[in-house]
Length: 89
Ligand SMILES: Cc1cc2nc3c(=O)[nH]c(=O)nc-3n(C[C@H](O)[C@H](O)[C@H](O)COP(=O)(O)OP(=O)(O)OC[C@H]3O[C@@H](n4cnc5c(N)ncnc54)[C@H](O)[C@@H]3O)c2cc1C
Image (cartoon, rainbow, N blue to C red; front, side):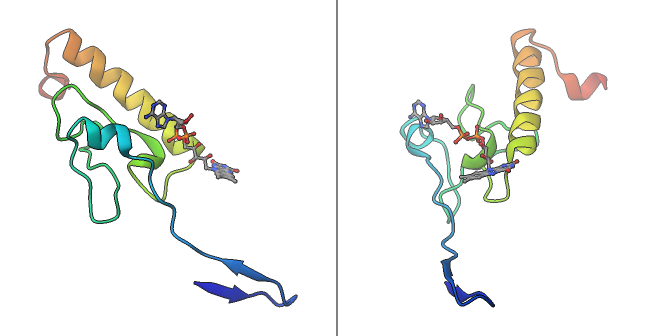
């Protein structure tokens, strides 16, 4: 998509292309736009593989990517401790 600004300059509004090669190599499911499919804890469709940030959403930004990282850190710890965080909280 191209738009002409009031000043007459032209800009391109291409959608970002997620850099999903590693996730795809690992067998993770992606959506129709190439974003890695994750659940609320950022778990992919492959056990033991999490994905965060830009590779999961075109609406991501620094704050969201960092927040995703915190979610995954908690979930990884939960998995490593072999307890169900959701069942106890
Ligand atoms: C020009 C520009 C300006 C922006 N300005 C803002 C802003 O002002 N505020 C804001 O909140 N956000 C901004 N963003 C968005 C923000 O930068 C991203 O949302 C954020 O960096 C996403 O973090 P990420 O960790 O998901 O991805 P990235 O920061 O892209 O990190 C992914 C990393 O994984 C590495 N990688 C990829 N594939 C592999 C592989 N196979 N093996 C090993 N490493 C791999 C990449 O090299 C990269 O270092 C901006 C983005 C751009 C492009």
